[in-house]
Image 1 (cartoon, one colour):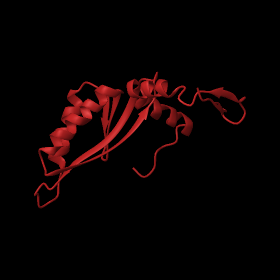
Image 2 (cartoon, one colour):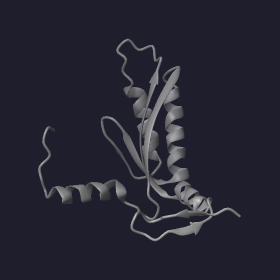
Image 3 (cartoon, helix red, strand yellow):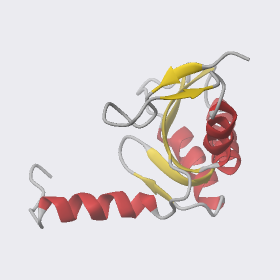
Image 4 (cartoon, helix red, strand yellow):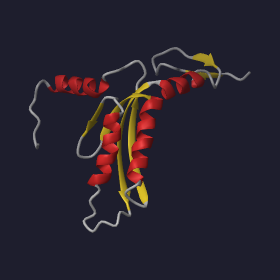
Length: 141
């Protein structure tokens, strides 16, 4: 069996010998079954609309997200969903399919924050940010 010398906790931690695959299965399992936030944007192209508007298609996607029962928030650029890996990506898949009905092509952009063991992060992250800002009023809104 091959082992390698590693410093798992950073520069100030002692070196130890580990198998090259040690922890990979555990990390993979946690990431695929962990609690997460996913911010996504989905829009059709090739709609044939002269004005280029995609609001009907986006509304169809947001409707699916809201009906999912998962915590969610929609702003002018993204919809964020919170939940477990499988349930979140099932909602994203269904929303993407709904948007596909409005055009010949679909664009999907997403960003995920996978953090096992943490829930309520959609508001928790914002609460910690506001606390760090010390109650400063937002500008430019």
